[in-house]
Amino acid sequence: MLLQRGAGLSLLTLDEVKETHYAGLEILAKTGVFVESDEALEIFHSIGCIVDKAQKRVRIPAYLAEAALEGAPRQFIVRGRDINKSLVVGGKRVSYTPFGEGVRVNDPYTKQQRDSIKMDLAGITRLADWVDEFDIIHRAVASQDVHPETYPLHNFEAMVHNTTKPISLGGGNGKLVHKMIEMAAMVRGDKDSLNLEPFMVLSTCPVSPLRLVSECCEIAIAGAKHRIPVRFTTMALSGSTSPITLSGTMAVQNAEFMAGATLSQAVNKGAPIFRSGTSTQLDMKKGDASVGSPEMALMAAMNAQIAQFHGVPSWTGGT
Image (cartoon, rainbow, N blue to C red; front, top):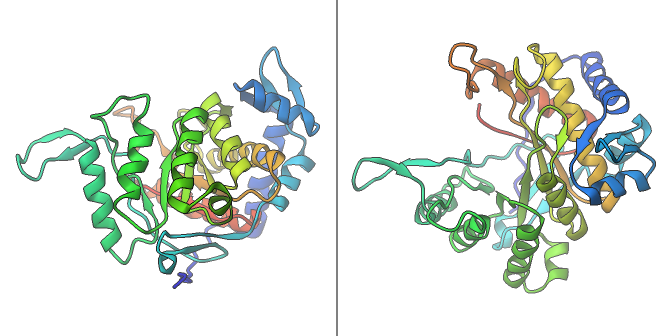
């Protein structure tokens, strides 16, 4: 059964949503974004962006960014390996996933805290597969007992063996993503079947402020070519890598997402994407990110509201 739950929380007026959207467009057109990948620079240049190859700076005209948003699908299906666990995303449907990216666990046998290992990821994935409230399984912890250059592939293996729900995980870089797609095609049957019915979501993060690093570009390009959903997770930090005001941070987040969306749609119009944001504010005393703060929850709700204005599915976490 495809899940069709829905809910909404509107913190911004329509005028405020539009102001945030236009602020992001202005940032892209005037300041631009740093793009580390030469391949991505060529793609941006090919569609009419203003590209300074020496500085690796790309300025994206507003009409190109808005055309990318119009070209992205408003909703799509992420198939479970068990078709009854497939997921429709988009509109005002609300789905749940475990929070991710953990690096430490409390060992259930020794009661001591230690680095997470591949076996932990397999066990947590199996548990999340059993929990009906989780609709898609994001990588909860890292496989730190394997070689760091290949651990995204080990993460994929641990997850795909322990759930028939859709999965979400980071791809590491372009080379690893292509290997992961080959593995996923073996699971699905072949690449054509995977492209038509992807069962995974690739996660990648622009580096705030306003940087599309090589790994981010490579994952975006590979995902778009194979029509694997990609979520661009912006983590602008209020008071550190973005303005201290929530509205200023949302403007930076908006620009970073639209830069990724423009790259994705330039590679393959109609490629599925998520607007993903886990922004919060800097804890001025401790110097770290205040995950779980009220401000993070507010920006999560704003992220979803702006995504609805853009007409793309949203993803958020840490609230």
